[in-house]
Length: 324
Ligand code: HEM
Ligand SMILES: *[C@@H]1O[C@H](CO)[C@@H](O)[C@H](O)[C@H]1NC(C)=O
Ligand SMILES: *[C@@H]1O[C@H](CO)[C@@H](O)[C@H](O)[C@H]1NC(C)=O
Image 1: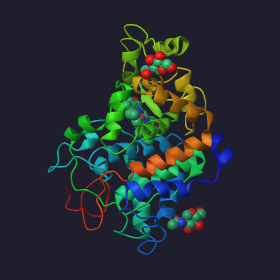
Image 2 (image 1 turned 60 degrees about the vertical axis):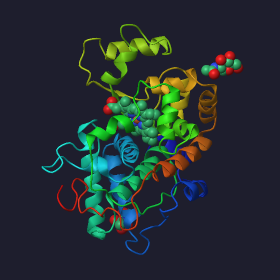
Image 3 (image 1 turned 120 degrees about the vertical axis):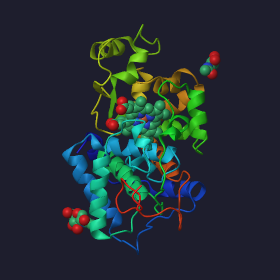
Image 4 (image 1 turned 180 degrees about the vertical axis):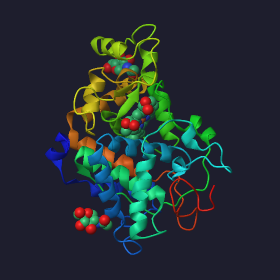
């Protein structure tokens, strides 16, 4: 259990999420599986807790998978589809993400309770929500009813997923294209309080000279860990100040101290007074940040969803039911 979790275990942010839902994703419903599979959310939570307690880095993996799923073709589990003969170029080949086997483990636990009922898109949304509880100590209601898509194309990634070299105006446009505000962008960027990165994403800010917006001592330490001609694959923690597996508002303190990995993090304070103010607010008010993060996760979870009879409920998360 993380420090953040023991400090605010049980904080429930449902009302705010409900308010956001009514505008963002009116077609999804809270307790969507209450009659078709009453144990669905509990089965996801149990399996997610087991995975994250065995490997505390996994909470971050689920949260990032959810972001990448929702930003590309909506939250339709397209990120989870494996390469196949009929689909040689699925999204997952474009960017290496962690946690696919773990999602399959959760899906198997849910299938054991209610076969063929709960979508992989919802399982990922619930697992991401549960990761905030387990690694962040706050919980909120996440609506369900997403259906699984049948396509996944790596060519959809560049136009959908923002790059770590982006400045704030481009980030705001990227999130705006998905119906998310600048405030949502800043709140969700708090996910970079936990989890991992690789030297290859950071070296553009280290060489040929240290990015002037980066704290000098922090940058020099990174230069040691990520030598100029070293392998880009060295793993770093996003947050080197406090528990690297705790989802918290420490991220905003790191942004203010100029001790963050990406241009897309630092630009929130260096390029816009409006977002700089939001960073300060989130740094000063951990519970306010949790509420904004929860609201933005629900909003992100409503992006371009398939509902009703659209798509399908996959039997396994790595393949469509027709095997593609
Ligand atoms: C604002 C635009 C964003 C950019 C440019 C960005 C970029 C990145 C990059 C480059 C990494 C490191 C990946 C690696 O080395 O493997 C990363 C990690 C991560 N990102 Fe973001 N990200 C953004 C927004 C988000 C959002 C909205 C979330 C979720 C709410 C998120 C959650 C995470 C998490 C949890 C990790 C750590 C993953 C792990 O431990 O495997 N990011 N991000
Ligand atoms: C979840 O775990 C609790 C506590 O171990 C157990 O009582 C419950 O039956 C589990 N629920 C499901 C759906 O697996
Ligand atoms: C921020 O506000 C100050 C004045 O308070 C102004 O001088 C500066 O240009 C603003 N910066 C940006 C990036 O808008």
